Length: 275
Image (cartoon, rainbow, N blue to C red; front, side, top):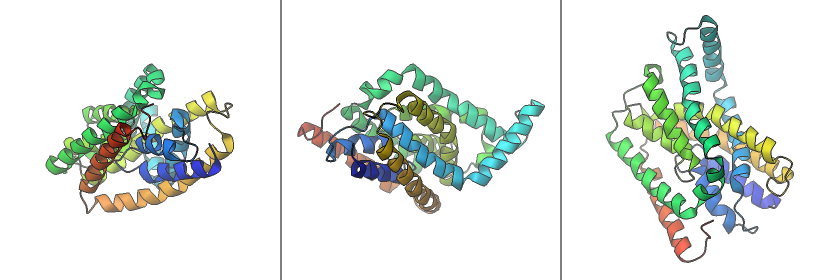
């Protein structure tokens, strides 16, 4: 992988990570179309996601500091209830368990069979339609302070589905939030917060596992892609949170369906390889 390809992939990662369109699907599809012509791989994808999660840490630093402080106080008192911020901290930890367990259990499939482009295309279309249904019929009245334990676990299960490229981490959790009655902004904000421990852990795991393998993760280009993803991701967070307060998710639904159809067409024309 060359520097120019890595920078393009970092830009794509930053642009798509927080939008409900699946960043992993975009990297999986666009990678083989670049001059290098290769799938960047699950390791490269996970490591560059560290950049976008650092953007979350910077943007939500006050929220995370408040939640972390309340959670630590709650843990010392051995009282997980009560304070809404403390409960949110416990819910984020609980919601991380599904993706952590399933990610380790199916790590070989995540890096191989689940990256089949036919499956990616199907997930783009199917979960795009689910997002549209949830956005159209969800009550959109609940705030994060009203989150219950059952809802936190459902958010976590929705996030775990993003192990399949095409589902979208933010798309899956936002869809689940809308179906449970949360406002668009609340579902989006919680999607960002919930992703922090899972994505950072995944990226660091892949960094330790493949960091010395220059063929799988070329150090220079990977660092460049991660930095580009950080800067781009920060800008996207600002724009996206402003957008969801006044607009529906319909443009993203249409985009996902069109992209899924395009991928199927490219596969049928042998322009893309399924693996």
